[in-house]
Image (cartoon, rainbow, N blue to C red; front, side, top):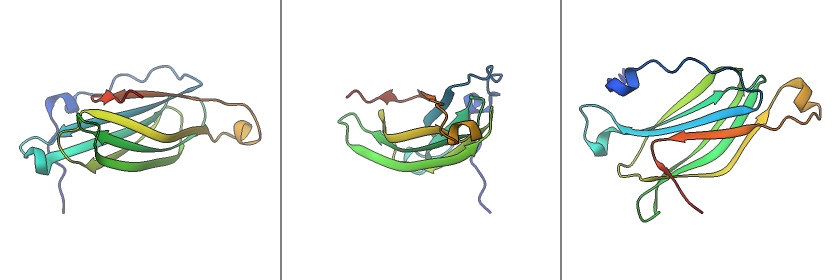
Amino acid sequence: MLLAPPLSAAERQPPPAPAALDPREVVLSVWQFTAPGMSDKKGCRTRVVITNRSAGLVNFSGRIYVLDRAKHELDGWHVSAARIRPNEETERLYSCTAGAQMLRLQGSSVSDDSPACSDGGNCPLTLKIETNLKRESP
């Protein structure tokens, strides 16, 4: 049985109280850290959380890359999640290569899967990105 590494003090903090539902917002959080008590090489983890702050069911799909200072790709993942309920989230935890400095998001899409939207309604969503890495500039 694999046990998850203990969380750091910052990771043990309870999440902030849920914000009021924004009928148009989905939050993508990407955090890279080293598991406590492990070397950078063996303990590097990337945590990806997709939070639905909209009033409908949402889907997310996108490619996430982490880069070094010279903008060379260190790691990349295709992340997808379907039918995330309002004010709920889904989480993924990936092993990674230590030394990432920047985040690149490619080919991302977020959509509302509510009946009113899937029947041709116009239901645009805003994707907000939170990360402890710098965002790659174009």
